[in-house]
Length: 243
Image: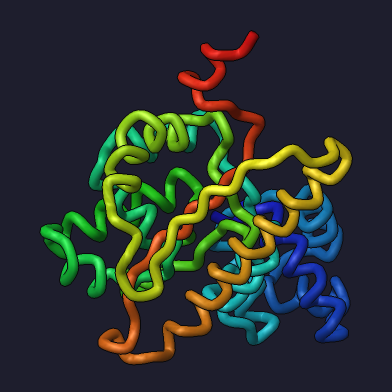
């Protein structure tokens, strides 16, 4: 959510763009010019006052709030507390995964056994956690960057390791568009980070293609999960045979 200070900063920018002086604004508000200057300098005022200034500038309050929200930096990762809140309720985790894929509320409730009321409740929770900004008509803005990743040893990835990995790898990986590659080798330590960067680019390409394909009919799309990883590792049964 946008803070009052953020809104005041945006108002001062709008004031300059409109070429309205503090004296002009003070007259519109029925206040002393010195009081207006002090109020704007302080950066904190009631929302009703912000709305009054918006009217004086012929600016819609909701539009101002939306512009400020859109200008906020996107999150590359969540905090431990945010992730812990997400995995505390598996239905909430489900909705979180869905919004990462930019699903609408209707798509979520059509695909899963969630009522519209439950879906709205979970969207509101994700708004409070900071993953989305909930907007009118149950639309939302995702507040996560394109390069967003769950914390490596955070609650979500720990849940994935404990409860999801075996389920994922139980598949045959032999369907249309599926595949499983296992490559082992020794490479220069200095080159290993470059391979990780390539894997990250593949993940970003996949995410961007997902967004681009949202304009296609649902019948022309299929849900896929791309899992990429690289680590220093040797199968325990092999390591036991080392001299």
